[in-house]
Length: 187
Image (tube, rainbow, N blue to C red; front, side, top):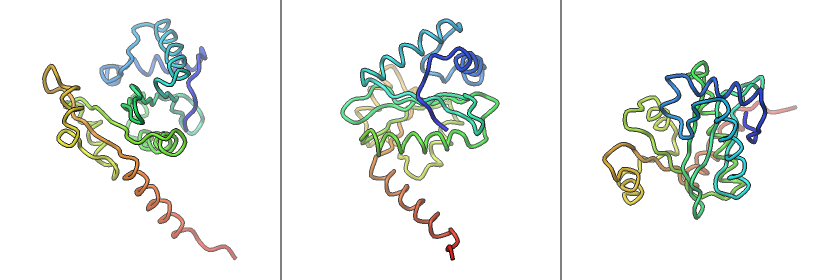
């Protein structure tokens, strides 16, 4: 479902083509206007991850084809900002939820993150609805007002959502326990 980012010609070409779709491109944080620029940005992303500044993964479909990226940017004191995009042909098929689950598990259980923020443009209804479906996501415009105001210092552009580690962990345990309870007993 997820793998570390690579500078791979085939993968970069597919991701660049998916990223430039008009329904995707406006919501991508690291915009590339050419294939060569996309390869350059991918190299920079890999180097930034090696320095501990961000964490970036390629999202794969069930046949291991690249379909988007998921990233944690601006890491500071166990917190960072989530950035996700998935190619238009894969919208509405559950990949966003699966990618977030896998990424959150890595961030909270392997990388010791304590908070994941999501800044979502107020007009990006699709992303807002996706975030609000998750049982461990909190609207944080008021509870994290200092972060909210930093994001919107030039006017109200973003809503701020927060995924705290404790709330995610509680949801993860409930889901895992419920799945185990529905499994048939082996003889």
